[in-house]
Image 1 (cartoon, helix red, strand yellow):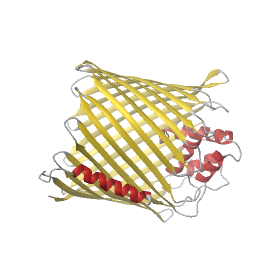
Image 2 (cartoon, one colour):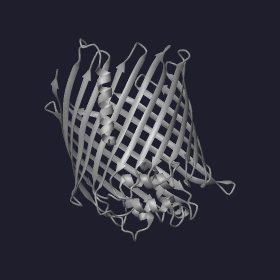
Image 3 (cartoon, helix red, strand yellow):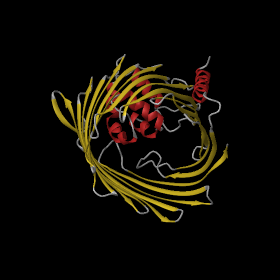
Image 4 (cartoon, one colour):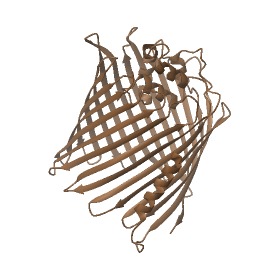
Length: 484
C-alpha cells in the first residue's frame, strides 16, 4: 500500500475517533472559502550587483476550510493551492495542500490532538546554475529549497534561514573544498546546485498525534509523536523520513514560579546521505516578580549525531529575559543569550547576544522598536578568534489611516562584520524599508499594495552589494459559504 493511502486512511480513522460520541451531541459546521490573486515584481531575484535579473510572478491562491465543532471535540479540514506563473521563464509552479487537525476532550483532565498535513509540489526546472560557475555563484542563483539542502549538508549546526545567507555564502567555498574532491557530500551539493531537464515533483506529509493531561494549577503533561516524510520523484534527490517522539512537563509551584522541561528524539533517515539522530532537551523557568515584571530563563541542550562522516555537533543555549510593563500600553522586553557549539571538525564556537524591544499599543494601531547585538568567536588551533559581529536596529508601525484602510511601515538596519579563515575582515551594511496599505471593501474583499526596498553594501570579494525592489499587489476575497 502506498504511503499516501496509508496517511489518508489513518487520518480518516482519527476523524471518526474524534467525532464519535453521543449522537445527540449538537454540532456546528462552517464551510468558508477565500480566493487571492497576487501580482509580484522583483527587480533583482538573485540579489547580485552586476547580473541583475528581474521577474514578474502571478499567483492564484484558492482555499476551502471546513470546521466542525462538537460539545467535546473540534475538527478542521483545509484544502488550498498555490498556483504561480513565472513570466520570466514562462513556467508554472503548482502547490496543493490538504491539512487536517482535530482535538477531543476525553475527560476533565485528558485531551488528545491529531493533525496531518499533506502537500504536493510541481516546480519549474532549475536553469540558472551553469556548471562553469563556482559553487558560491550557483548557490546565489539557487532556489530556497536547494539553498536549504546545501546548508544542511555543509553546515549541519545551522537551522538554516535567510538570516544565515551571508555567513553561509562567505564560508561555502571553504567547506565545499574541505568535504574533499569526489566525496559524497560534494556530489550531493553538485546535484542540488545544477540545472535540471525535468520538473521537480515531490510530496511531503507530516503526521502528529499527542495527548495532554492537566493537573494541579496551570500544570501540564504532554506526550507526542511526529512522523515526516518527503518523497521526491526527481532523479538523484535524496528522500527523507523523520520519526520524532516527545515528552513535556510543566508545573506551577505557586503564583510566582512556573517551570517546564521537554525532550524530543529525532531520527532522520536519508536515501543517499548520512542518517542522523538528535536529542533535544529544553528547561525553562518563569518567575513573576510583580504585576509589571516577569523574569524568564531557559537552557537547551541539543545533540546531533550522524552515522557516516558528516560532522557531529552539540549545541547548548542559555537565555535570560525580563519583561517589564512601562505603562498599561507599553512593554519593554530584554533578552540576554549565550550559545556554545561543539563541532567535530570545524572547531568550537561561542556566541553572545543581547536583544532589546519596546512595543506600544496605540488607539488605532501599534508601534514597535528593537535593537540587537551579537558577537561570535571560533576556536582554532587552541585559541579563540573573532568570527562575526552584528548590530541591528529596526522599527515598525501599523495604523488605521481611515475606516477600512490600514497602513504599515517598517525600517531595519544591520551592520555585520565577518572574519573569514582566509582573507581580511569583511563588513556589510544591510538596509531595508517597506510600506503597505490594505483597503477592505464590500464586506468580503481586500486590496493590498506592498513595497519593499533592500540594499546591501559589501566589502567582500565573495558577496557583492546589491539593490532590490519588491512590489506586490494583491486582491483577495473571503466569505462564509455555508453553516449548518
